[in-house]
Length: 324
Image 1 (spheres, rainbow, N blue to C red):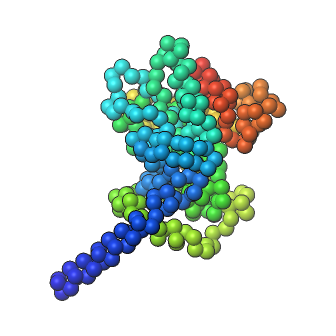
Image 2 (cartoon, rainbow, N blue to C red):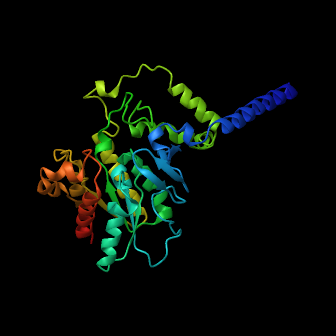
Image 3 (tube, rainbow, N blue to C red):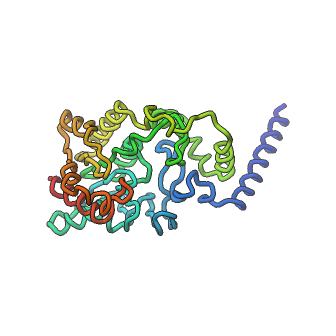
């Protein structure tokens, strides 16, 4: 019996090995991406997806992209942090990452230049990731904060938190939104070691993509206008609480930025109210939006969400004014 079980195991491992070798000959990692527009993003067991480290990519809507050893759109980062370095960790979504602009044009890079020019030298690390929600950034800060040791954590999240869940979203092909971000992350946590191994297997990724291409009973998210969202209000508050705890644990100060979009989100006061209750720094941008008026979308936010270089400069100026 033991011999038969051993032989069976050898056969299974052999078949898997042959399948894995075949998959690696047929497909590259970008070929197996969930989103052809985001080939720089790879699966992650607890953050759902991250940018691939040490990568050089060409993106359809963006152009060339280079990532560092930590998978960030930033130059190499010294770990442990040098004693004399003042470090700001900039968390956010594709606006923070810099959709459609050069790395030097993002508000994180501009903030670093402005602080340096004013005599307040700082290393502002751009840790923005496309399609991220505040829930994903909260997990990132919990996992990476102790290693990065920031002095200040900037948080820039809103619109992605409202994206629909419980359906198929044509605008977010990175993941089938079968639940809220918090639920999906909690489901994955116990399986993180196994998923870490599986996500390195091209055979697994090919099979996974094949299953995801099968017909589904999930509705189109656009057909559920008042349905569940990726990060409901209670989860946004929980993510903010987690961020505060993570920041406190590494001795960092938390700064919540009200994102600047052409879309009017002034009726959403979750970020402002949470900062008031917890006595945390809140950086308002609604007045900038009002001042820009009709020029806002035409010159500063052509697609309504992602800032152009001029808007990044305005965001950086506001943050620089408010940082202590």
